[in-house]
Length: 480
Ligand code: NDP
Image (tube, protein in one colour):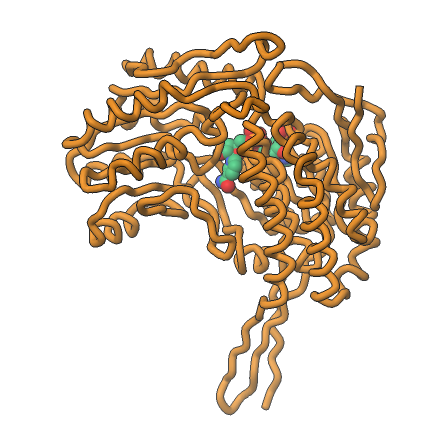
């Protein structure tokens, strides 16, 4: 069976302890390759390589660094089909989604930050008659990037690209459940002429290799995307070492639909915002609030569309939804559907596992599920499910829906459907979240700040925010 390898100091190498763990294909439920079960010794090797590479990489001109990153971007693009197939196989998502979203975004992430760094400016503050301050922005040194399984290469590169562009060397860990495209990235970097040790990619469990990264004294910043509980642990561990932290965590996003919206546009977008990537996007709108005059109309039309959604193996061109990422995750999602029933909810469509014909009969497929009749403050409506499950609830007033929308511990993203301009501004101002889409969903401009409030995280990614995070400001004062 294929064994993927760590990428340290520009070379693929086995884990120091020689141990491997299974990597399962979600579409079939079968192990299809092995991944290193790395530990703190591999982190040490990666840190040593990064340390040795840092002086030259950080001293390189931004044009030269940008050129290497552009070649990485082109290198992924040139191997598009291979990356798409690998991402879809590793994660269970439809091939069409990996081809249209995941891998093109990884290409853009490297391209975007390779050019953004050329335009990145720092501040100057003049003190009339006294002197001038200017602020240098220096790379931090060695930084750690830890990413989740839902958008594997997309989120991995979203962290690595700004870190590298700013002149840092990186030790990075993809999710142990979806390591394959990160594994392929090593070769692309090598072929692009990236100097050895600039990017080091380690595979293994969060609790061992991830933890060792967070604890390593020479890794000065951690950019993490994942669950809120893991984020809490990382913050607790890193804070006494005064590490810089960017934490992108969970969500329980509201999708608020007013009666005056463009109904057809809202309906087709709500189908996507509910179930794209099997509902495993931190930005999916899992709580749908519908103004009462159109509640019944929405319910009938939405349930009809959802019940026709084709759930199939990722390579099936007809598939609109593929497999969930793992067996434990599927079981978690199914347990929340049971909880919703116990809490008094009615399943309007879905609510069950889908068993496809062999060889996919052991894959992790769940029918898209719509539930109504739940209180806004029950567990189903407060806890992150991160799967193809949405609840629908009627509302009567703006104040009421705002109260319900803001009632969870999370605050990542919100979607708002209305044709009343004043209301759109009023609501956008008052919703507690880092991102609000009005009459749209998942429209992303890479220059905009990305991140959440409350338990959805600390800090922002994207554009200047990311380049600021991955640099240290140093103020210099010169007396006139
Ligand atoms: P986890 O928090 O379980 O894992 C995220 C990453 O952290 C993985 O690489 C994991 O390793 C690693 N990890 C786990 N424990 C530790 C530790 N003690 N120290 C260091 N690293 C550790 O999240 P999931 O992978 O399950 O991802 C789903 C979550 O991600 C959801 O909550 C979702 O909302 C959130 N998310 C947030 C986004 C945002 O932008 N706000 C975007 C996408 C997802 P391993 O899995 O290999 O053990």
